[in-house]
Image (cartoon, rainbow over all chains, first blue to last red):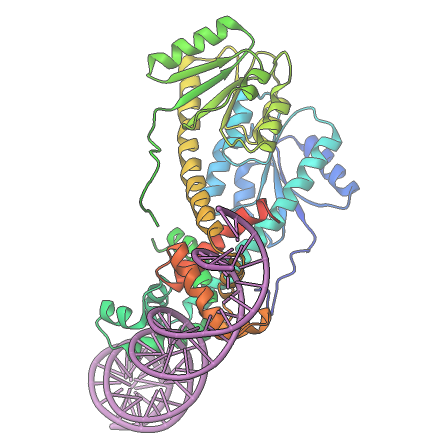
Length: 217
Length: 217
DNA sequence: CGGGGGATCACACCTATGTATAGTCGTGGC
DNA sequence: GCCACGACTATACATAGGTGTGATCCCCCG
């Protein structure tokens, strides 16, 4: 399944720090720098959202209480706009329900201030590792979808039908075309998708379905 | 994929309450009873572990601080012995790190005491719904595995090889047998697995793989 | 020791799949 | 108007898949 131009997922990770307190930003930047992690800081959620993110693995370290938006809303926004970078939350005024809410909504960690440097590092390192995993599967999915997009509409249709297990003649019946035509579209789909066997095509179709649902319904 | 004797997943759910405080057990039992939920109570983790669980959807409501074991260890134990029932934690003495730890390890909710009745109900109802989902996929998986076990060793071997996309003759070469024999085992596998098409067999093999890894390596 | 089941194989036959060659038709761009 | 491209079709041939019949061998169980 691995092939050709694989993007380096072992690029240098980048930690995004969002906190309105300048001294905290500085302290975190120093901490991360001390273990060789690059850091980008933002004073507000808006700043972060406005920045265009470099395509690198990383995580977000976020204060729950921000001038323009609370951390929980921020999390929701990230999901909405399709940013899957893991979030480490921190707060000076949090309680258990807040932390539980954040965790339920996908935060990978939640640290009360003050925290020990080591705890923050553990959280961030874990989050970065998770991001690496996420990027690998997302990369696979998007490359698969790219290939799928190169199929003509009919070829896509035929691919999805034959991978349900239908025979060529059944697909032909469903689409109101001849079996020969189905064979051709099917062969073209195999070629363009890079599937060497029918089993591979079935697996590709299965892997594609979640991605297709997420977009075109 | 749905078939024959489907076990009722809409059986009456059962809430397991584990708390050493008798008055709390009583209060929770009353609360759950008021919305028509059956409850089973235990004073210690050991009691719960010793009980043999009825095969019904449900969840566990657990006090973190127990006489014999803390809730976090308890969670680990449940995973070890393969009990996947969702856990709702509660505590009177918890802090954020404790709640975060519990959530990271699979708790579906974490409530500080005292809690509002409605919060507990929301947590438990959510947990039960999650258990229903879990049971559906677990049921499917175990039925699949049961069918797989009815295959002879050779048939299993052939099934796993042909579902990688290998042609019959390649499988024959790999196993050092003739292509005819492969066809026969393959046909037997299709029959016994109840796969009407090769695509179905591929999907079954894929669904089977996690289960097989979990057990026989 | 007889019977059953698993595993193996051969022959025969039919269906399904895959590909090449070759051609029609319609649409959209230059 | 010509061309490229996608969709569609047919004939023909080669290969792969699937099944039935019949048969051998081995092992375990009663």
